Length: 161
Ligand code: SME
Image (tube, rainbow, N blue to C red):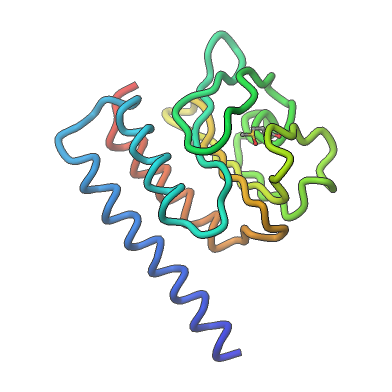
């Protein structure tokens, strides 16, 4: 139990560190595309066990691929489709411990086993999603969800769309 508490405290501190680094990257820069690109890179290189980290943005009523790190991915995703489109339809984060158990999961990279998608909600509008994929089943939990929602909040506050 003590070990578990310590591990989750460490992971929580890791999100504090990432938040601090993000704030540094966003200082004096409000271009959403530049900030999204740096955020995708920072997350991909800071969070362990990821094979994909990036953004899809709403364009013409569907999600279109944005800045990311990882293998080339599907370009367009309809609202309500896959984990990303489900997060848009629900206007809420979707945490998938095992992608094989999520009906309609879109397998862009066969290595992906678990996924966390956080919607970009600004002024009541869904602008897109942040999508994280892992080759490890059960990689993401509530702590990651809260951490990533906080980071998305920083990104939205720091960027003009
Ligand atoms: N798996 C996602 C598609 C995007 S890729 O993972 C980068 C989905 O089901 O929406």
